[in-house]
Image (cartoon, rainbow, N blue to C red; front, top):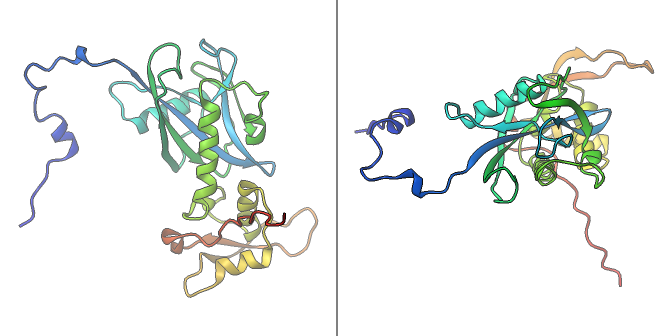
Length: 260
């Protein structure tokens, strides 16, 4: 006979704190969320950054985010902070990336931050708000440049997010989050080329998507808008359910030069 388990909410509130429990005997620390929004803009892997109004790191650029409120979940805090500081609604692909708890990462107090990774085809209008005085899309290469002043440990968080995105292209449907629901094969191939900073053979790429009894994309029967150079418009595709069990393209690993 199946056992009925209480829901997480009921387990949380089913009893009072243990007798004699004193929370003051444990160290206090705050929890924040930071959101890495990746997109492809002008054929470059790009990230949404905000410029901070207040100390610490006033006028520095950094990831949108802030303190979690006691009455909200981490996901709710991430969605709220993103909207407050940039005007952007939390996208479909929004997942926890990593936790960062270096006790020296924030001079105000001991702060643990939960970083999120989000991927969108395009961001649209970005509007600074909350405690952000500016918000705009940066090429990742520029954001990670040594001369760019990033707040807190956001350089490390952004670096980790980019590496996660590069890895996930090989194992998940993340590539399809960078494009619209319908796309050309050229647009999808460009995602891999931009994120991996490499070139892929168009014929081999198409073959990887189409081979086997369960292709990764399926034609919509529609054509994309004609390009500025004219010619026959390319066919539009949509992703197939095959992405749920893997990804069709693997990143090339250059072998070390064995010559002496």
